[in-house]
Amino acid sequence: MKKRILIMTLVFFTGAVAAGQKIVIRGSVNLLSKSKTIKISGLPDAWIKPDGSFEVSGTVREPHVALIATDSSGASAIWLEAGVYTLECQEIRMNGIQAVLMRIPALTGPLDAMIYNDYQKATCSGFAGYKTDDEKKTANRTGQGERAFYYVDSIIKKYPGSRILPDIIRSTKHYSGYDGTKALIAKLSPAQLATEEIKRLMNGLQRNEAIGKESGFENFSMQTADGKIFKLSDVKNKKLILVDFWASDCGPCRITHPRLIELYKKYADRGLEIISVSLDSDREKWLKAINEDKIGQWVHVSDLKNWESPLAKKYAVSFIPFRFLLDANYKVLSHDDDGQIWVTPGTVEAEIKKRGL
Image (cartoon, rainbow, N blue to C red):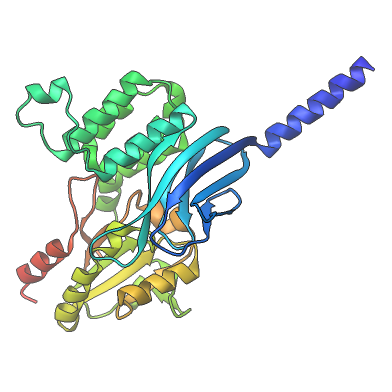
């Protein structure tokens, strides 16, 4: 009998591990839209009650970053692991875009989830007001990159064993820069260094070297918004090509679309082409964003694999918008790189004028 009980216990335990551990998320949302549900990737959708409250329950196999949104909003990021959460959410609008976005002003729950939510709020504010004693002593260390570095460094010092650190360092690299990111990585434990996030980050830090060895940008093949197959080599007789990685739920991406429209109207006939590569996974949301932002006049492609897109992974695209500016031979002239270089619409226009287009 004892042996049977032991076997049954082991079977139950093994099944529970395989199925994942329970998570319960209770919260409220301040709506701007007429949204009816809360959606958290990997968990069941939950109805929003008339008073704005909701409850989501399910299981998580491994702690990870997920996306949370209403059925009408763009997504925000949240750290998920077994436990009980209480959230205060709100839909917001940003100047220049029609899409409603999601924010989480308050979160209580597992420690790593609270650390990550504080980081998300600090990122949205540009780490404004964050200073350390070291920064105060150094007059020239007042920029956003330095504030981001010191912010993450303080988290490492306070919570050195946190499982969220690799993802925070990865997502902060465009603020901290190449040297700052390497310095933060050096503070991690062997277990943290072995995570996929840090492995991908190290690959990304080598992007410049990889691009330098290639004769040109990959001649990728992807499906267009109207269902055709597009190859980079299909672009002929153009002097500059802007490859723009974006997604429908990316506010900073969509806020620049009016400026890209201006550029395209002005310079398309003089040698500029734009190729927008969407990191969406939902085709309808992708097409809807193209229509809402009125950007269908240039090339739009996507493999609908989100961040798992092979092209995005090859070039270590870890944030969006992320852009590459190519010449007529598809050679990379410039690209976004760890916050040290930004390919903005202004950058593109400066290159256009430089070439006398």
